Image (cartoon, rainbow, N blue to C red):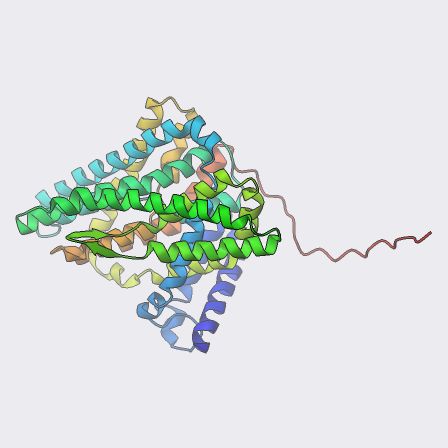
Length: 429
């Protein structure tokens, strides 16, 4: 336990220290945290096996998964703050059309390219793996995107639309994966499970949104019992942790497997709370400040989780490069075409696709589900390789696109390290 506490502290400090050279190189802090994770991970300092200094193995990193789940819950809860009714009325329809269209087009593009690889080199990639990877390609990581937006205080039409699309992307990706994985399993087993393909994913989305809405209303009701800012913040933090715990529950009703999407549950909780609570802005700001170390830890652990052993497998590298290129093309073309169709501004049309490239937790979860396929290990390794590339490059590309769109104000060289000013004496006369 003592070693784990030291390890957590070292991880946060390493991430913060790495952000200094990253700032000099004009890279987002998220990238610095991920690189810090690689450096103290099991393939660098962790390999020295010095207790408390780095993560000694991938199993050691996985031991902190509960912390990363809680951090992801806070990130999703914070994203709910972007779903104000005024914004939904202004661009909700566009976001839904773009979110669905770009995800479907990405899946189709990756499917087409990887099925072509299968036809040319059947020993390299199976048809079931190609179809499954196509669906996984639709998923976008909300965490890195949100952190870039918050770090640079990005704001504008592109940023607001991006946050909506990323959230919608999670639900669409879940449906696409369920259908594609069902087809892939049918190709290998010779039969298709309609319950797993059609009913369970819809139930997961509906139940996740429903529980999230109830938790948002309950948080708003409980919050009225307290007037102290610190107590209200403590209640909000505890409530997000409670929501994360509920979203991780799994059970069966007959033959139907019931599960929840952590991202959708926490996002919906934040959305409902922010739309019904008059003081939500102030409270969300305080919660965001409280969770800064948790967010740093989340990305450092994410960097440490990246398995560098996959780089030694040439098949993984070849399929991975094809996957990354085709997914990037699908995201850009899907976003560009759908933005054109709904008549978005040229800045949004040109830059939205690039901001949707980051990929991480959701895709890894899908890859874990696909491990039952005959080519499941290849699917997992390809997704791991893509996450390694996208997580290191994606935040910088997101920053660049938001900067090009004029939605990031150049940072001033300011510092919080100013000396305390002496209080002006108060005259008693």
